[in-house]
Image (cartoon, rainbow, N blue to C red):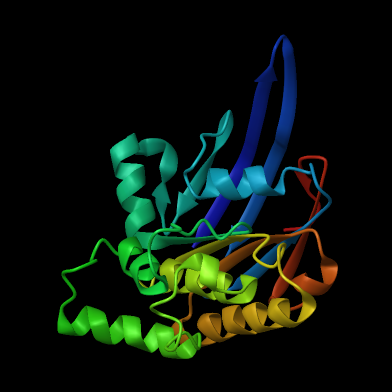
Length: 222
């Protein structure tokens, strides 16, 4: 489902080249839950953003479900992300003026135009994540754990084949972290979504099927 080949990413800071990825190779099978673990600054978030088509590599290539991102124009990459990828971020990235329901619906471009089938799919996700009593609340009225569950619902409501999670428990306490991680496992098992999770915490990584270690822009095992 995810194939990364000799991926390099170099940032230009003034007159200095700063390598973030140094020839990364990685393969993730369909339905697999993989964690990439490493210290801050090792390149793991850059790797996730390149895989998600949010930033372009300096060289190398990424294939998602057999599609080479390098062969796509920007509009095509945007459409691929919309159809096949769900993103979960550490800072939740919820719109503060919308309710929990509004944030979830907005991700599907269906706010105000829900049909029966789509509403049924959404309700299934909302029930799974325990959000049915919080739908009318805005992000500022929700706890951190609840906000992250809304962010997860937004990411998975379209049933994307690939879920990319960047430090999804980074802003949560231990109890809420466990809730979120168990939900990711349940989504992986129930819907067979391929999940790639970035974390600096080896304990968090144990919730996944496979752990990949990263250091200084290199994947140490893949």
